[in-house]
Amino acid sequence: MTLRTFLLGACSALAFAGMASAETLTIATVNNGDMIRMQKLTDDFKAKNPGIDLEWVTLEENVLRQKVTTDIATKGGQYDVLTIGTYEVPIWAKQGWLLPLDNLGANYDVDDLLPAIRSGLTVDGKLYAAPFYGESSMVMYRKDLFDAAGLKMPDAPTWDFVADAARKITNKDKEIYGICLRGKAGWGENMAFLTAMSNSFGARWFDEKWKPQFDQPEWKDTLDFYVKLMKDAGPPGASSNGFNENLALFQTGKCGMWIDATVAASFVADPKQSQVADKVGFALAPDKGLGKRGNWLWAWSLAIPAGSQKVEAAEKFVAWATSKEYSNLVAEKQGWLNAPPGTRKSLYANADYQKAASFAKMTLDSIEAADPTKPTVKPVPYVGVQFVAIPEFQGIGTAVGQQFSAALAGQLSVDQALQAAQQLTTREMTKAGYIK
Image 1 (spheres, rainbow, N blue to C red):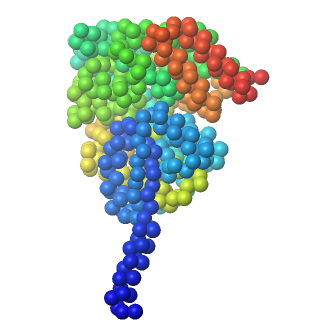
Image 2: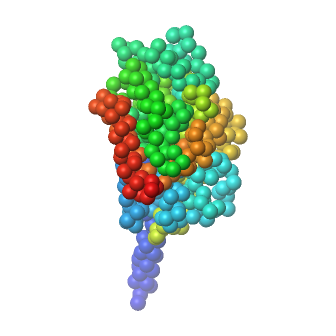
Image 3: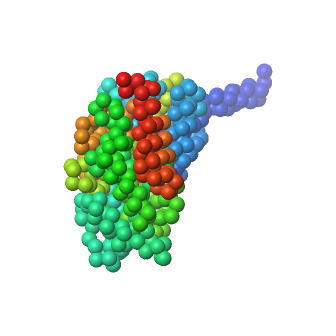
């Protein structure tokens, strides 16, 4: 063998080894703004991990949930990293579908995670998903419209005040609608909002014996209030609007108020993204004087499916995307205002973040006020603020959401929607063995 042949063979072997060691992680994620931003910043990850390539599957919220649930339940193995929520984590961990995140690196600082967020992602003392951002919900409103109407938003408003203000600041001729609320059907879309709202009206999904409660006056009060308010002061086509649609409406100056996820605060307050950035104020989610506000508790988190063939690479990505260093990277590239909120104590102790994000304290207060173990005024047998932490809820919640979206669209009356919700929920809970 000549030296040239030997060297060519050695180079080929090295090249082959390099190719063989390169791994491609397939990451399923939601099409929310913070996730889109993360994808644009992954050159930092690739520079630190040259042997790992990333392939993104970015989906609308309802579609993401459906595809990820199907894949993990059937052990399809389509994804190496999953974007999942606080609802799925404990259920899937108990099914053995997720790997515990025991190896996120010496510098990860798991104790820096906010206790309210961390506890929802922990089962039997082990973390099964790392929070990318955490949220509660709040009122975002146009201070200029309130001033023009002679109104002052309290820090802790009631639903009655919000409804009255929404009607007063509506100007349909100018395409300014007093309030934008979720109407798109889905257990994590309209039902996240309506379940949290119903808690403050004294309603609950189930009584202590798992009997559905849609035939009770508290749900009737909730849905009547919502449908009438949206008819009087909401935008046209509201039954098709979820988080992203309402965000776009608010950013373009078409909503006087929007009650939704606290994570939206940075998007409506950023002059690069929002036409009304200098006019936005924030308040706590409303109440009815019964001791519960209509705020929820959620985290979009990254998890690794059990049986993954690329665990080490997946752990590196999860650790990178949910680290303190990632927050610093966002701040360096796009300002502290855009750091992913709601996950780490250190962010809320950061003076630069507090200065940039006028909504920081209200976000933290809202997250810490939500109690998944006591979400309602009356006792309940379930855990979860804007969802019920049982496997059956995903299907039931979406089916109920379709009835309530139809009521908002005028295809059903409120009474018809509630009757249908009661019947379908009773049927499914009986079939699942909750109701004897």
